[in-house]
Image 1: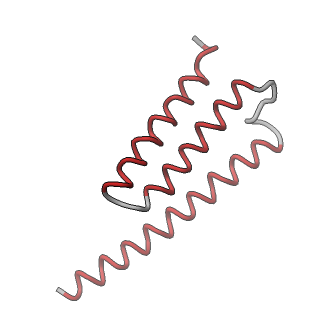
Image 2: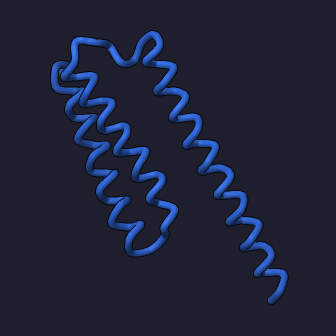
Image 3: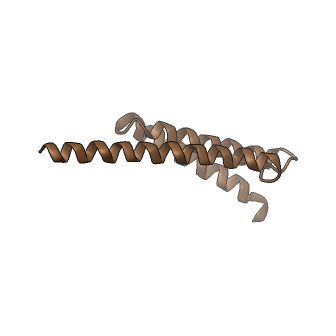
Length: 93
């Protein structure tokens, strides 16, 4: 089972990316960012399985963590802006 774990994770990230892409089209446009990140995760996990290089060690690990931290910061800032806007609308009512 251990040989297929990376492929299972890749499939999981792809399913989540597609689901959030559909939700972004229907509801909330910011989900495009998260969907893009999940697609990046899909590519990273799949490449890790297909290539002989370990993409979760060394410099590659730093690249992966850097992208994850950047997306986390973008999501946190967007959340704070959304909350601030929501509080301002509630104060007007």
